[in-house]
Length: 306
Image (cartoon, rainbow, N blue to C red):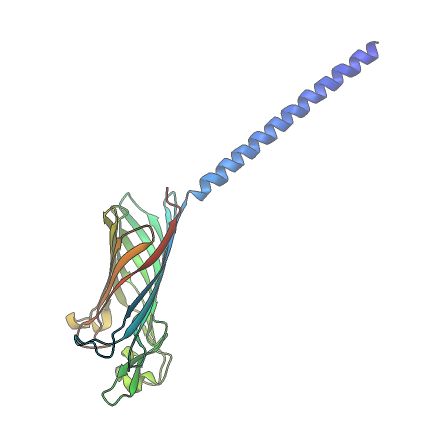
């Protein structure tokens, strides 16, 4: 009888120890799960994709005049932002492409843009940080100039030109809507990979004849972004870039580029979008270049913002 009671006591004790171990293991798993859940909050991302289509048609006896036309455009944009303690990592992508076909004419581009940007930063204070960034700008397809005799002249293409700029410096960010980067050390590579470009564009975008890359090691870059919801259904986003080569520093040799996008939301899927690019680059043209596109279409957007 004593042996039986002793055996029961030992079994009960072992059972309590086992249950205690299980409880401790469960608590550890819960803590680990909470840590993993918290880690996902360091990321904020958003993605949007849009399509727009425009068409105009007229009968042969339409007296008011006009021309049959079809236009198509697409936009894909995304952002992925990481924040943990003092470290930040921002990534942005913007892809645009559009074509228009008028009756009796060849298909032409109405929009063409590739923009990629990645920036790693370390916060020094609530508004200031050091950063290192890489950004890339180019286009998807060939750009041509339409001549009066009906022929075309090739003047640009993918990676012709292409711009890859790195930058090291300081960033001022007073809020989530505005940021200003100042990079006193910002080397830039200009690519023209198609040797036929120089025939239609004698400047060859600053790349020496017979070469495919021009390197500007000593340069300064200013990069500013303003992204704000003016109203509940209206957003304005502007991006300004200035690039100055120390070796050829002069007022008319400083490059300027301003990208502007206005988006008005009509419904959850229907949006009106105005995009504009304003560019001054002496190596391309002594004048100011300008492009603008207005579109009504479908825009689908998702994000994980809290």
